[in-house]
Amino acid sequence: MAILETPTGLPPKSVSALRRLRLVSVPEAISFLLLLGCSVLKRTSDFNAVPVMGAVHGVLFIMYVLFWADAWNRVRWPLGRAALLFVLAVLPAGGFFADRALRREEEAGVIAARARKEQHARRADAEKP
Image (cartoon, rainbow, N blue to C red; front, side, top):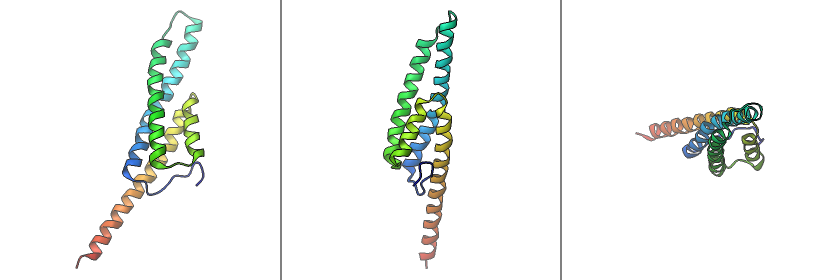
């Protein structure tokens, strides 16, 4: 499986783990960009919001890492894909790219789960006398 391929047949808990990671990836990226902006403002003016934004970004980054570890455990990504998604959390706008890749993977998992459900229903209907 290539790094950017999406797996099929994800169980519901894996899709939930991907959804949680997606939900925190964009706010984490926004907070990182805001922290960088606050850092520049701190150096160029009297405005100092770095302690507040640093704390907000720190909490969001820790959440991202925890959700990333949970998703890696549930989805069983190859090492390259897991490393890519971790590195994206460290880049200033990487969370936006992580969100895009995770959305595709989540949608593939949802589609596969629906297909399994329909196939199971068809089998049940076929077995009825």
